[in-house]
Image 1 (spheres, helix red, strand yellow):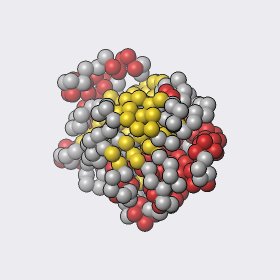
Image 2 (spheres, one colour):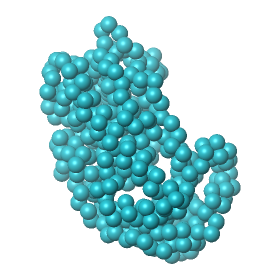
Image 3 (cartoon, rainbow, N blue to C red):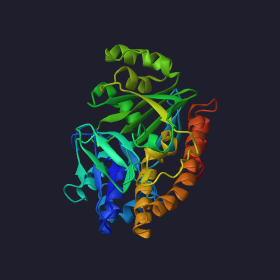
Image 4 (cartoon, rainbow, N blue to C red):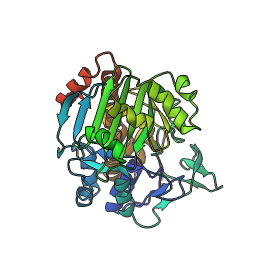
Length: 377
């Protein structure tokens, strides 16, 4: 099969796509804007679901390597109210949704590809349809034509505008990164209050969500339901002053909770949560499609973002294999299942976000975790 396949973005979905194709003898090239695999931190932990994320890794022939990355008991969940009263305490060790480090998972996928598959420091600036197939232009002046271009380039995809005018919109929820890197004695009680995995302290319109890592560090977020302009007005150039502004929103919360905001030791990065319209579709454009956040970015409250990206990548690869020499038939088949599954996940994510930040919190969040089938699409 002599098909030129260009994957834009070396995230989880694009890497799985390249890996499944490689396993079946089909070469693809991944173009990534970052300078190398260690150009930036890759975020925290992911729970990889049996019904989609793990199936994709099986298709990639990486079950054994994935199993070696699992962090036992890291999927423990504890839900508390603003006073620190424990409302739900679920132990870890759930095989259906084991936790792994995102960076370690990405490194595993990179290592599973032949040398030269990923072209680093190649930032896409423009993509256009042409008579010989989609044409890509890069910031370094290079340009290529491919038979298949896959936008695996995240929420602000440069490939997506070729297919649709839809853009992610602010969801009304913003995260601010928090963390305690050094387990100082004065933080001992606060760290112990987290439990063995993830703590979710929830009230209407706000939350503190933290994960305790085996090495003793804590990473997570303060989450607020606020207009984006309100958050953007906070000056985080003085980190302590910015954090104090956020901490004011948690006045009256139990000290072992609010300390994570007041005394955070990491850069307080602002992360507004954006989402594409649930159920978004696009018309068929020859030789072009999307996967992962480029196709269906949503809030994280269904835990499906990374899992869908992995699954999208594997499913697209399988459709290319099922339709040798007919890329558009492969894309039509892929998108016919992509659209409904992403719409269902986006709807579940929106419902769960309303449960987290609505008037019923924290009881509504406890209800979600007591009935995990309701959190899913």
